[in-house]
Image (cartoon, rainbow, N blue to C red):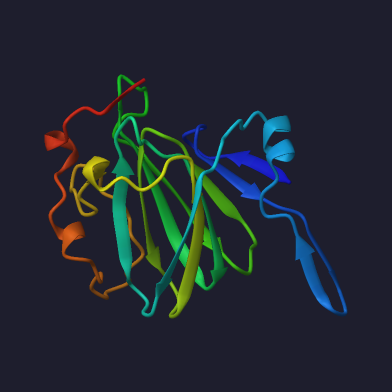
Length: 185
């Protein structure tokens, strides 16, 4: 397993090893001992799976507040996404900054988004399937969001002239300047 830090070092790209032959391939996409050895001591409690039928489906920016805050390990099993993590930890030297990576089935990479970050992605191919592990169960009363199009964040979503396809909920999230503090550095 290869682990690389992004420009905000707490956000990491994880690339599991994949072994292939004439039959196909095998890969351990998650191994607690391997994560522990890499200093990533996380206890995942739930797996989630989403299908986005069209290019331009934008999900996010989401997070849960304590005591149900979630670390997320996100991978794509079909298609491609542009995945974004925004630091929302008050007092952090990277507060309000974002990092992004293309995550795809072809690249076989994953992104680890820690607690204290708002997370979202936009699909770059039709029929994209995303699976992700989280360290706390879904808790609707602790579910929060951040405006995906906040001009102060200026996220460079690769929409290439198409309009983002959003849920009703994702059109109503506050901007960073109006976001109540939920995490401190």
